[in-house]
Amino acid sequence: MKILIGCEESQTVVKAFRKLGHEAYSCDILPCSGGHPEWHIISDVFKIIEGGFFNTENGDLHEVWVWDEMIGHPPCTRLTVAANKYYKPEYAHRFPTIHADRENAVNFFMRLINAPIAKIAIENPIGIMSTRYKKPEQIIQPYHFGDTERKGTCLWLKGLPKLIHTNVVKPEIIYHKSGRTDGKLHFDTLKLPKEERAKARSKTFPGIANAMASQWGLLGRFD
Image 1 (cartoon, rainbow, N blue to C red):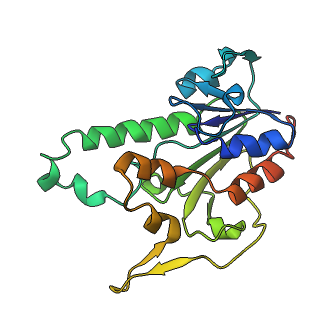
Image 2 (image 1 turned 180 degrees about the horizontal axis):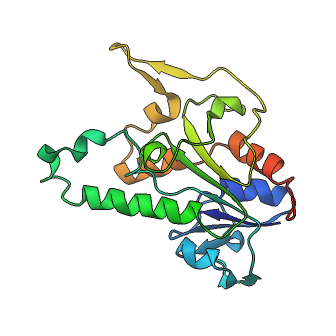
C-alpha cells in the first residue's frame, strides 16, 4: 500500500511499514533524523495529501495519486492540556498569541482527520481535541506494546480498527518525594533545551510503530 506518515521526522513509523514492504513516506517541514532521506518528504503535509509528483529529501522524484492510509502526528504543543494555566488572562503578556496558536493547531488537526484518504489514524497526547472534536477511539500506552514507558496516547481512527496490545509490560515509573510520579522519558528529558525536549518526547515508541505496521498494514486497499 501507499502510506503517508504525516508530521514525522524521526521515521520510526515509516521504517516499520517499510520493513513489511509498503511504499511508505514520512513528511515534515524538517529534514528527517531517521537516516532514510529517500523515504522522507520535506513539505507542507497538505500539499502531499493531494497527491501527484513529489521529491523526497534525497532528490528522487515519485508519483502517488492516491494514498491508501495516513498516520498523522500533528504538533501537540497547543493541543495538550499540560500547559493550560498559560491560557489565563494573567499570562497574556508572556504569551500574546497563545489563543490564536491553539485555534491554528485545532484547525490543523481537523484538516488531517478530514483528509480525503480512506484510512486515517491521528495520534496525539491527551488534550483538548477530546472536547473540541470527539473522544478518541482508543488510548494506548507504550507499555502495552513492549516499551516500559508511560505516555498516554490518543488515537482518532477513520477506517482503521483499534490496535491490539502485543506485549504488556510493567512501566518504569519515577517517584518524587512530593508524591508526584513521572514516566522515565519525561524525567530524563527535563534538562534538555525546550525544542530538543519537545522533539524527544514526540517520537513514537518502536513497539507502537511495529503494531501499527503489522496490524494496519494487513488491511488492503479494498478492505
